[in-house]
Length: 462
Image: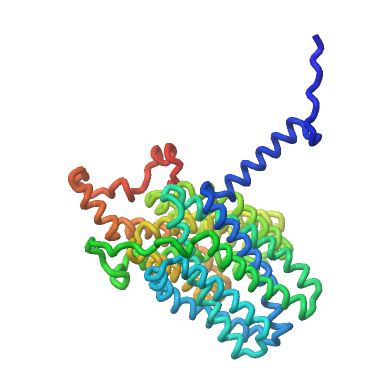
């Protein structure tokens, strides 16, 4: 009997095409779509938020210099003041979120940002620019910890890190699309075109505030009952602050990719500067596709500590690749090293963000969670202020700059483990497990470094 070949379905797609579409769908779901309904709504809102941000940041420098009429030095000074304002105001806003509910503060911050970026549209002097930039900087610094508190309140503990990772991946998608949209405005090269980009960002925040309100985040009860346990206050919780500082140092990838890498390629290597654009695209694609995968092993303290340790290793590898790039005179080898450097700095980004989410949440006092999360964000804020000057003055100009940086990165990653081990939260777990603890004072299972076997079984980074 002759077997007739199977006919394509009504769409004209054969089995291979359908299989490819199914695989692509699974990839998108695995990378971008949270498991819970509220998580998916928050991811969609994050896309709108970052779409406007991408539009703004891609054209902001040209808007401030060409339309507002500021000098590059004035722009840099104003943004530095904005970073300082964020550094000073993040913790008070975190305290406010603990008292009046994080969801309400989150919606208020989005409206605040919308008004701030709308004010940029009528800015015509450095003084006004500096005031508006400081107001926006204060809100921008406060948003990440407050939004983390909101996400943690609406999803289960088992889904928290995965949801945060997918929201971050969704933000990368929106940011990339926004940057592409900004390209059109830049090509128009008119005051109207640049102003439209800024106004579009302001509108995106207003839309986000409306959608967050409709999602019900303002009704979330994120105000925990005061803890009865004897725990140190934040000002005395030196270990939490210490981990925040170490996390901030590992977050230096935020400055390395947009600032240090292009400067190093253009001034200290024979690699064509045209390579940098594709490297940035590679970073974006990796961040979208791999963030959720890198986050899964870090959903508990052991994996989170290991993630930050590996982030230090990856950051050191980036430094070594850059150092080698500057000493290699063969162009194609230099290009390969540039690709390796981009991959390693992206791995640092994925590992550091995943580890930081869990550690910042698990070590925070439940009755002051938003305040603690805001304090943890200060490490990243300090990085944004100090890293540009440190890299350009101490690392790039000196022969041993990158090797010394690599050693420092490894030490920072390794320092996380002892600080977390002796944190009061872990000390309480040690006390609770003292009956079954080993006499050598080993770290309890809740925060011990996972061994190779456990990592293989549980998928934990080791």
